[in-house]
Length: 575
Image (cartoon, rainbow, N blue to C red; front, side, top):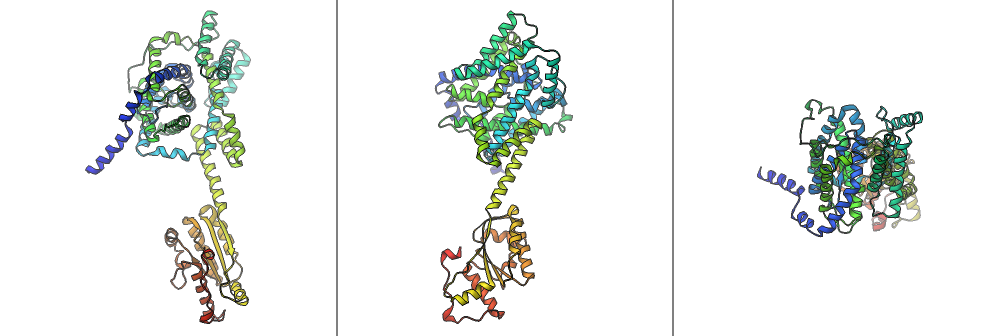
């Protein structure tokens, strides 16, 4: 009992911040404070925009950036990660808002946080490494397309049409704009996007998003442009934490959306942390602690009216590029946004929605790494297919289905490639001390096959077809020392093939069966069929002698005098 409690406590303690984390925060504070300020300037329009896009309002985006950004920075597994509302999460939240309303989103966020903590306790973070790169690239491309399409109504200055399919909503918004054009809103969106994209190439270190948004807000106010609809009133501060949104009766129906949100939060956060590691030297995140920190962040954010959060790749990249080296930068980013919430809400409320749409349009365009896509597309046909399928599924279905489809297709193609590595080749019998006539007589009645590679469900039936088409001989020897892996399907297929050969009067012997193979063969009843008179053969030489003894006993071959018994085969021949 005491041992079990100690293990549980040790596991919990491994997920909590340690002395090394706090010591790291005290190093080079000036550089990290400046990095955090820069990230906050970049994050402000994104937090506002993603809050509006989610359907819960700009205030929800700010609350998420402050609360989730703080907790994820303290308890997360990366020194460089910046967390908050993201475009990928917005894509998932829009249909949840449409079906369950704002309270449903808050409940889903809290449930997803609990699931993330559970994943951290189960040490699930390590499995991120098994997601293929084409799935990640296709996923990112699909998200970028969805984010861009979601901004079309605000960018065109039209009310958001009904519907939960982004393609349908976008088409209806374009039709609405064609009937009643709002060139002011469209001009703001295009101008902000162009300033961000051109500015990023000209001066990458300058936060042109906030510059463009401020300029658009000033122009809208000075020119009294009614067509440039502003965000609207924002509360001066965060609301008091509350669980009033939680409806215990709806938890069952919200479980599936919560699983989807948790899966996306885990995927995007671990991917972002990995990107941050790759941009630095000496930094390495703890994936389980990162899941734990994101779980706590998503439990707390809904209590303050925030949406589910994840690690944000763009903001994390800005954090790294501006010199961040500790969690102090991410904490500073959250603190600056909190000051803006409390001190500048009236000013923020005047920002035109079209300007925020332009920020997100530019963000979506910058998410698409053309070089990476070109590399994946040129690598192999399989990689290109996985990338395209994942991107299309993200656009047409939803993100979780897209990842599942990408993983299933990638797994199927990988299995096919592995199965093709399995070889079933006839090998010549060693001459030994036989004369040419004796060897010809042996070869007439005995055939040896070497099995190379895996014998599992994806390759087993091809093996069955080839083995059962063996010509009329008396003995078949299977050289199995090079079988790399075998599953129950492979063992059953082997058993079926041996039984078919035995019904034709052909004796089947096996050599070089490994201990792991012996267990699976025995479990399906195939091992006994591969034994001759209760014996197994460690080497091919022993199996060939047993085959000859059998043929001599059957009167098929003449007995060889003792002095002419063949010498043992060479080590190379036995493999």
